Image (tube, rainbow, N blue to C red; front, side, top):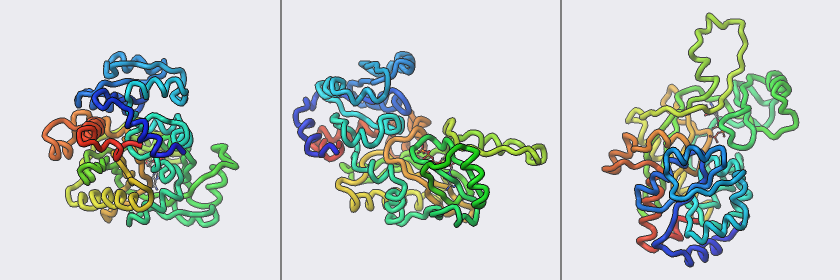
Length: 354
Ligand code: ATP
């Protein structure tokens, strides 16, 4: 684990007037880089060859570093080059997925926005559950073995792959059959009650500088084929068996009915407060609570993503909520850059970067 003090030392050597914002070219990079430019920063996009066309087209990176593989960011020379340019790296979902939580903890010497200690709590389902339960959040029932399955469950496998490979089962027999069918035998899994309701993914931002947790926007993930299945009348497909899958394909905007907002806001604040008790600095910057709202208007949470999520890409020009909080277009990407700008001004960059 790279120690916080090591990152602080690097930050102390930075020319604070020449801080550059960099990210890996994927996921929410367009939004992050546009936000950084809107706040007056220089930007660097570190892109794989096959993705470079995107950043050329939209021209959001003042400089481009082309790599063969996302893991090449671990290369000492690339890291040194970025540190020489006073880079603050913005992590996103693809960054964590492709580079790996352990590599980020142990090998990324570049100062990163947010708190890398959160990776330990987020990447382990049991730790994540412990954190959310401690924050008073309702979670789907967890089954420790297939024998216990007494209702519809979702079987999940490690690593955020946008729901890829997950399956549903109603009992042990179905569980065993699907493990075989999906060639998952011998793999680690977790079994979770399937909660029926409306999906809601509120996007929060915790600012240690303002001591405030903001709810900037909200989305629903569009998933294939489950969202397509709802368009086929059951009368037509009766007898035709299709297994639902939950592979994310896009995001659609949503605003919650206003009477749900107290629950949504409190969840975000409680998760942040609890994180401060669990690890130093606690949660910093953007995060998303992935939830389902049941017919009894109770919000159940199945996951937390402790960084910018791709659903925020809907709101590059701001959301209905961010427009009330800010009188200018404020995406999550821009909010990150605003926090960095403000921390640099107040001499508090060490409070938001690890
Ligand atoms: P990511 O980390 O990229 O968000 P993931 O691979 O960890 O994705 P989840 O977010 O846990 O996957 O789940 C994928 C999808 O499966 C969700 O968006 C939701 O549609 C559905 N889902 C997950 N858990 C539940 C649950 N307990 N009840 C109902 N639906 C669920």
